[in-house]
Image (cartoon, rainbow, N blue to C red):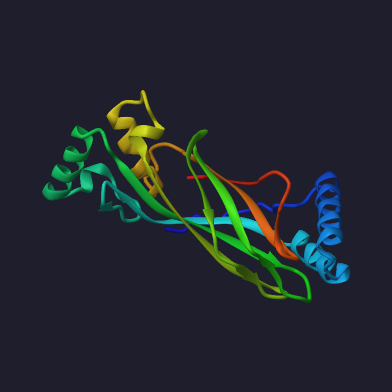
Length: 209
């Protein structure tokens, strides 16, 4: 399944946030007695990086792997029973991977220390979490970032019918009966001295499936 954004959504730091971010860096650097030029260089490199929503992959609904374009009618007898058992228990785990692309137009490497994220489906908050691992973005190059997602759709879509809850899982696999808006909000952190410095606010990346 290819869900490549036709026109890349660039997560650009607006001037106000740049000033806030830079001011916070200067204050942090002052109190940690770090080399200011090195820290400012890291901020500058990171601030020029772009983030794009690329695709959703490895969709599993109630433990059932949903292949590209798969419909509910494509389930075999065992999978139908597995889904029915999950619905009867009012638990419907949905697992999938979101892939982002981070591009670095600079002549020097850029890096993130970690990131927080929030994932929304059709405006409903699906999950919040953290990716606690460094991410390196090579100079004049890009890197892919995989964010594994897992949530119980019954809890997220409380009040929705069982059919509506199940259909959402199939839409993520590429079923075209209805569009679903996926939004991921990320808050990157960079290392400044001994501290993790957060980007002010969240960067929002959206895609319609």
